[in-house]
Length: 230
Length: 204
Image 1 (cartoon, rainbow over the protein chains, first blue to last red):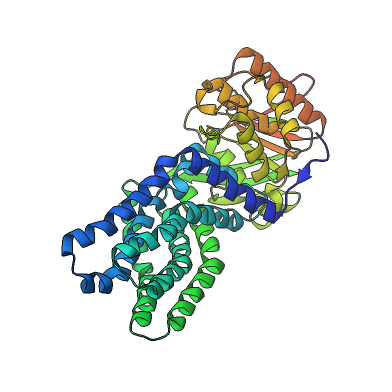
Image 2: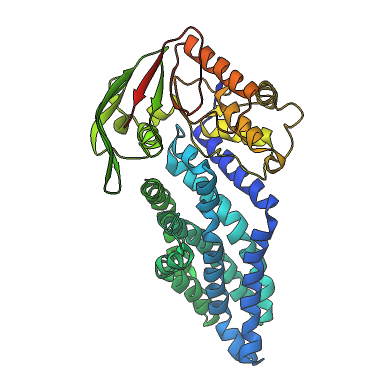
C-alpha cells in the first residue's frame, strides 16, 4: 500500500480519547461502580452522624471531597491494566508519536468517565447536606478543577504499580498522600465562601495545581510506564 | 540498515546471550532460532527498545535506536505474543485504532479490504470476543497490510493460524521483501518464502 495518510499529534490525542470512551461505554458496569460508590459513601454520612443540619452543612464539602478522592482511587487500577494485559500498551509505546501525548489522552478519557460524573452528581448530593447555593457553586468549581488533578497524579501511581500483585492497595498508599493538597484547597474554598470570604485564592491554587499536573504528569507517567514494561 | 553489535541481554541474573552481532539489509529476512527460553522473545523486545541491553548497541540507519526513539518507531512494526486487540471492539474498530496508534489514518473501506484479505469476510463488524483464537490472530496480522514501514519484527506470527493463513503470511512477507522491506521473526513452524534466502540466527 502506498501513500497512507499520516495522523497528526492532535488526531492521535482524539483517537485515544475516543477509543477509551467507546471502551468505557461498552463496559458500563465499571463506570457505574465508581459513581455508585461515590453516592453511597456520601449518603452514609447523614445516616451515621444524624440529621443535625448545622453539622451536616459544616462537613458537607469535606465529605464530598474525601468521597471523590476515594472513588477516584477505585477506578485508577483500570487505567492501564487492561491495555497492559492485552498488549495494547506495547503498541502504544511503539507509536511514532510521543508516549506522553497518548498518556495525556488516556488521562483525559479517564477523567471524563470517572471524574466528570462525580462533578455532575455533586450538586444533588450537596443538597442532601443542605449546602447553600453559593457554597455549592464553589464546591462544583473546585471539583471541576481538582478531579482532573486526581486522575493525572493517580496515573503516575497506576503506571508504577502496573503488573504488581496487590497493586491496588499500594496504588492508594502512593497516590492518596499526593492528593492531599487538592483536598485542602478544594475544601478550603468552600470553607472560605461559607465564612463570607472570597474563594478566589483557593481556586486559583487549584488551577495552578491543574496546570502543573498537565505539564508534568504525562511525561512522568510515560517514563514510569517504560520502567514497568522492562 | 539494522545493525546489532556485540549485544548482551539478561533476564534477572540469567545471561540469555552475549556478543551477538548481525546486520539486516533491505530485502532480507532473518529467522531467530533457539529452544524455549533461549531468549528469542527477549532479543526481539530488545530490538523494539522495551528492554535495555546489558551491552552493545542497536543501530538503525547509522544511529542508535535509543537516540532515534520515535523516528525509529515510525519505521518499524512489532507483533508480539499478545494480539493487542480489544474484545469489546469489532475487528474493524480494532484495526483502525491500531493503525491510528502507529500513525496511519485508515478509512473504513481500506480497513475492510485489509480484513477481507486476511480471510475475515463477514466478521468485520463482530466484536472480537466472539471470534476464534486464529481469527483474532488474523485481526492482529491485518496490521501488516495497513502499514508501509520498513522493518517487521514478528514474534511467533504463525501461532493459532491454519494452513491457509500461513500461506497468506508467506505471501505478505514475500511482498514486503520485494518492496525492499526487512523481516526478523521467530517461529517453531516452517515458513518458506519463495525466491529469498532465509538467514538464520541461532541462540543457544
